[in-house]
Image (cartoon, rainbow, N blue to C red; front, side):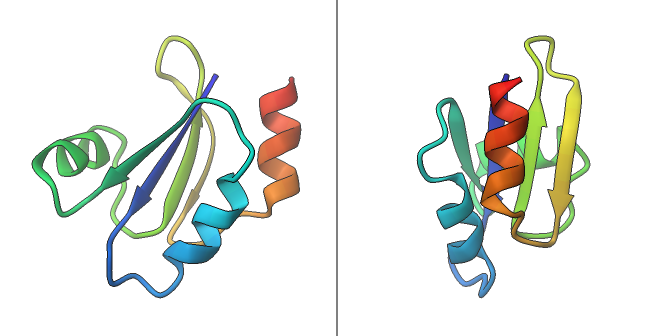
Length: 81
């Protein structure tokens, strides 16, 4: 599984989302102001920052938090399974 973190530099909630993802393996960070970040956000229908998605090996979304910082414990539990 992989964590996809969608951020924007001036987002006031993004630092909390980054902290929630600390210590988690396989975190991909996407800045939605870049072409690659916007393309990935579009693919996963991400319309707000921060957004954190957990996807399986096929790219299917297993869990997601859009427009909010998730609880770090929730991410760690899901990634452990």
